Length: 260
Image 1 (tube, rainbow, N blue to C red):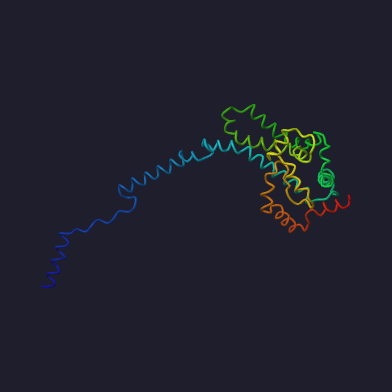
Image 2: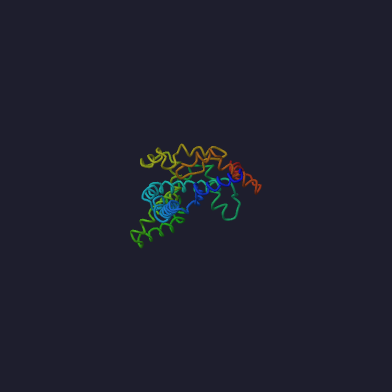
């Protein structure tokens, strides 16, 4: 009887309470397929179209690039001036063939007589830098004379960066000369120095304190303080000394003592 009753309940269960359907896999039902399609469309829009609003062609991005590319050009020129100045002050010897007399000796003499540079004429002061930057300027002039307005618009932020890099680089030695000139400077030069748009005189004096191991950037001087704070030049010198065994500024100090 018990067995029969149990069979009846089981049979009744099969007839009155059908088992629920198994849940469908995600994305396989109508709603899941719709969700998947919407997500795919959104991703395609981001990749193919919508994402461009945050790319290089976005109007806001271009405006920022046009605004900051001249500043970036001046910063890179300042860093390059510091790198060259640091290299010539710190390494090498006056006795090196060709490079010693032509390139290193003027840096050694400058520490002995900092105002000697103020007695150089315009060509002697700026001639070498002008030769270096002449070709990039000619290339830029060619582009502006041959490219269409649309092409120039695309290149405009980059060309602004290059132009400011070239201009500041070309006149680095002139700016350096002005930083050692205390009489007869034009008012517009002193204005640029006072507002630290170019290397100020007081700022550059820090470098001329023996042993001349800091504040190497001589175009604007903007990078001198941050590079000093992170110990950039000292760390670089430690790496080179560790690799070569050469002591920084050894020749500079020896040559200065010999001249005295």
